[in-house]
Image (tube, rainbow, N blue to C red; front, side, top):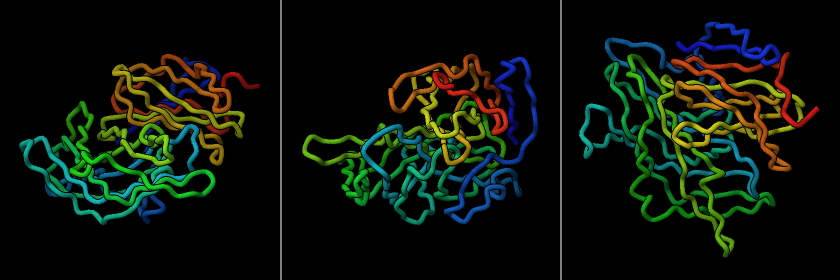
Length: 291
């Protein structure tokens, strides 16, 4: 069970309140799934449920409204299987509009039951031909997947501690980085994806003011990866940066109009799967460069 580390921004990092919580906030309304009843928290008869979920890093700017990904099949390897053995997940083929699933929202692809403590090591995602992008003017364009990807995109599951109970495997698309516009007016999909076990990671979240000004919030990991989100002005300007391992992070804010980059907060500690809440709707963080 994760915890939330609450940091009251206006008092700096001096006041830290540690409070218990239930399962992570997961919005699966479009799948008809109750976020507090995902079956991933316990072990039954030495077995644990593992869920596979698809999410997306929000688009920053761009000439599109939607990105539709044609998910045909998913297979996986565990830490007990050899590299030549792939086990196919029981999934229903579907087209997922991935830009709907940001800031902590995700789409369930499949649940499986494995012996408790067994860890997913690698995932292979197979996409079909029905991948499309919807431009800002409503035009629908095909997204061509490179021919080498038809055999499946092999994704290493980022993980550090061992797992002892049910958990979520998160397949985290970055649509903004995955779409390549060609000079002839066509588009291709070269997927940029992170995959990790959520129980082994944390998120940093909070609320921003002014409420009507969306900004890109991001941090750069020690490996040079940029993990980013865009604040949601329809939800009190909420932001959530997910998939963080233990460390100390500096959060940056990018103005979406001028592209100016500011430091939102420095030296934010993340430890042991504890989630960090920087601010609340009642006490939001001020976006740098605004009044």
